[in-house]
Image (cartoon, rainbow, N blue to C red; front, side):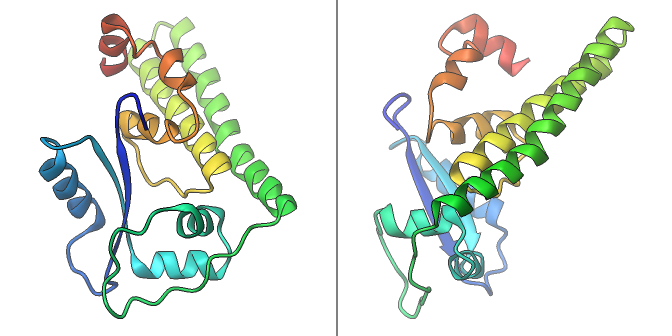
Length: 182
């Protein structure tokens, strides 16, 4: 992504690897931070294998349109296949209905608690609303199953398909970035 310049890396670990995916992600990003802005998506190889076998859009697209930097000897994955448009739309609708509607419900709850003067719970539900909505967008558009709760990381993932959300949160301003962090 050009602004902020970021490399998105998909890293597959051996299924027998004992180090957790998030630990590997943190190590990669920490080691690279002085060289380049890196966003690592780390999974066990079995996740990719299963995703390709059932023709999940994220995995199919990653392996058919991504750039392979390195492959360990012996790693065998099924061939990536294109996903039919009807199937894409059906899956996208399902993900949006699951997460987007949940986000809307959290927003309604946040508004209610705000009106009642319970600001702490209102802010918590507002966070949940943003998280669910971002997950819905990512899963509907990219087909990537999100297991994150960190709003900054979720927002950085949306940069793969739009800059508009970054702008909607005002992250291009100091005040917007401070409010988002708060």
